[in-house]
Every structure is written in structure tokens, then in C-alpha cells.
Length: 408
Ligand code: 7TS
Image (cartoon, rainbow, N blue to C red):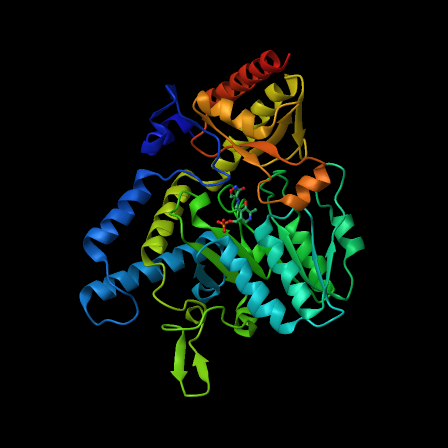
């Protein structure tokens, strides 16, 4: 994989920010989009746009074929059994809320348990916290290892027959650890619980296989994997999706509407009320084609090498504290520099054209566990190079110097 060649597909990367070449290290928040995806959206709107599932006219049929074709691409991409198990949503957040609302709130009873971790992004935390509050279920946490990782042992100890739902990240957006989802699913199933996986940070960076992982629900967002904003996916096993109540009611998701009751369309459309995210699905399909052409294994290898290269250099800088596991880390590094607020750090880095994220990363319980209020994060993707890492390291050194001078 040649990241320098790949960069040519991303027009946005070819620009100066504050008189420096842009070094985009915030793909964990949202990735950039290749020309292939931009052109697919352009083509759809220029030549094929119409509403889906209703018309007999040619544009309507074309749009429907492209929309449902994208669903099939997603199915193959994550190796789901059937396209009906792929629900298009607004993103990971909506996907997880569908399960928390239509499944957890419908079926949990007082005394049942939702098991999660304090590592979760708020999108995979608050929906469960609120579902527990609404149903009287217990909200419990798998204890973390010292480096913040989730071990199979810890899951075995935390789970019980009261556990009905295990809600967990595949890759954390702060620590970059990879949770042992396949083993967790096996353990959960032995206890009669289901596993809901937040795949927002895993799907862009590694091959994922629903049948191999055997998780019950899985959520991800297109905008973190070269696709457009406004669309994501909820995967669910058919029998569980059948049991899950619809999240939104309205046009397109009904079979029959009577005065005092209604019935729902079959899967997946039962969850896609209103005009669906047609162009978004087309864009997501193009993003999948793009990623597959390069190869998810190649992307993962490239990022692991970059992260290793970055870690080696960042560890040398005095006063830099890095969070998360040392080994087997995915595509991001979250850190702090002694006596420098991460927002100030990110502002100085931006003055050198380097984009990193600073803040609590929508993971306040984890910040508390780490005993920090905020942190900075550099996140990498297929278009990042060793030169980007060098720029970050040099930027960090300059920022440290700047703050040392200002405050000494
Ligand atoms: N889960 C994880 C692990 C995430 O990283 C994010 C977004 C979400 C859920 C929510 O995804 P959305 O597309 O519905 O917003 N994470 C980040 C981030 O780390 N910085 O900005 C957004």
C-alpha cells in the first residue's frame, strides 16, 4: 500500500493551512473523502436522483437499484447473512439508539442487567444508561486492566445469568484497544445475553465479519470510513431485528395503517421510516468499493506501522503521557503534555497546519477513569504518511518550547 499515491485521491489534503501543508490527524472524528466517493454522489444527483421504492418510472427504478445495491455491498463488506439484516441509519449513534429503544426498553425488566465498560463513547453509553433507568435494569461495568483494555477473564468474572445485554466497543476512540469481541460473544451467549458492538472505530480500519464475530447487533458510521456524513448502519441478526420495535414511525415503514393500529413492513424497511438516505447509501457503497480495492488488511498494517513509528518518537518527548495499551493498538494515539491544556496544544499544532482533536472525546467516564479532564488525540488513516508523524512530533516539540517560554 502506498499512502503517497492514495493521497492523490483526496483533493482536500492538497492544501495549505496557516501557511503549512495540511497534516490531517483527526480521521477518528471524521475521515476525508476520496474523489471516487465525491464523484459517485455527484453522478447520483446529476443523473439518477429520485425517490425509491415507489415509482414505476426509470429514475425511480435506478435510484432504488443503487440504494438496494449499496445495501448488498454493505452486507458483503461485513459478511452478514442477508441484506435484510442491514439497516441504514443516520450513523452509529442512531443505530445504537434503535437497539436501546426498540429492544432494551421493550424487553428489559427490573433485576436484568446491562453490562458495559467506562471506555465507551457516549453514543454507546448513554442509550444504555437511560434504558436501564427506564426499565429498572442494573447498569454495570466490566473492570478494566491497568492499561484500559478489556480482558476475557474480566468479562467472565463480571457476567452473570442476570446479564441480558453486553454493550461494548470493538475499538475504542480514545485508547485504540481492540476488545475480544468473538470471545465476549461466546461468553455472553452462554449466559443467554446478547452482544451489541459499537463498530464506529473498527469498521474503517480492519476487516470485520459478522458471522465470525457472532455478535448480535453491530453499528458503524460511513463518515469515518471515507463515506459521506449522515449515513451509517445497524446490523442485527434477523431474529433479533424481528423482535425489535421500530424506532421511527411514518411513511415507507408500514404495511397497513388502520385507525387504531398499524403493521410494519418486513426487514429492513421496518426501521427506515420516511424517505431514506439514498445519496448517502450510494456514497457509502462507493466508499466500500474504494476501501476494498486497497484492502482492509493492507490499511490495518499501514496504520499499525504508522502508530508504532509515532509511539516510538512520542515516548521520547519528555512530559508526554500516552494512554491505552502499548501493544496491538489501532490507528490512534491519545496523549497529554505536562502542564499544557490539550486545547492549547491543539491550537498551537493547528498554527502549523496539524489537525488533532482535543477534549473529552465524548468519553467522560473514561476521562475520569484516566484521571484527566481532557486529552489530545492524533488519529491516522490510509492517507497518512511517516512525514505526517514527523510533522506531529516536530509540532509537539515546538509547542512544548512555546509553552515553556510563555510560563517560565
Ligand atoms: N462510537 C465511537 C467509538 C466513536 O468513535 C464515535 C464517534 C461514535 C460512536 C459516534 O459516531 P457518530 O457517527 O454517530 O457520531 N467518535 C468521534 C470521535 O472520536 N471524535 O469525534 C467523533
